[in-house]
Structures are given as C-alpha cells and as structure tokens.
Length: 53
Image (cartoon, rainbow, N blue to C red):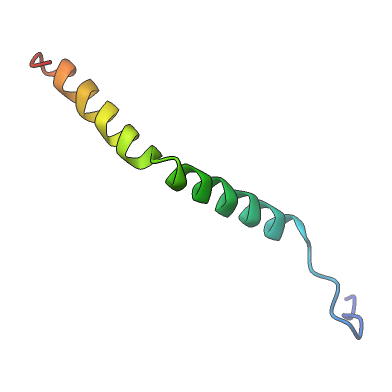
C-alpha cells in the first residue's frame, strides 16, 4: 500500500479540473440567461406535443 507523501500530493487532479470546467460553464450559461431560454423552449415543445401550440 503506497504511503502518502509528506506534502499530500497523491490526489488525482482530474476531478478538480472537471468540477472547475463545469462551474465555469454553468456561470457563463447563467450570465447569458440560458435557463430562461431553455424553459421557454421546453414549454413550446410540450405545447406542440399535446397539439396546442
């Protein structure tokens, strides 16, 4: 079993990179008002599926 080094640098970096990229993409999407656009499009699709829109 490998022992951790004195500095504790044996952690994988990939999860931190993925979380950082996700947080950045989410922040940009919110800043560009994407949630409102996605909801509006979902409402249009649902209305057309049931024959109203």
